[in-house]
Image (cartoon, rainbow, N blue to C red):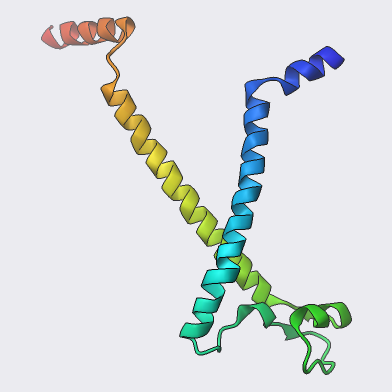
Length: 136
């Protein structure tokens, strides 16, 4: 059983996936920091402070919650913190867009590599067969 587990762990796919998860978690932290440090303040400045997502909430049980932040209210009252949902949606859009750009870049790169690569022997034979069939 130990040998099977060791063989499973040492496969390239498992190691690649582990690295991808670690890099993805670090990437998510960077995106959260960008959203918290850059995007949220810019939206606040542009909107004149009207759109400060962090402390937006909806009080579900009607109790008085004046002067408290959304986190303090969440501990004491039944609320829906839709402001944090808005921040998370913005984070998701940023991550999805960057992932799209990376996938697009890799797609272009691999197409360029395919075009630049010389044909293999089997591809040359297939092209010759195709050309012979076209002439008949």
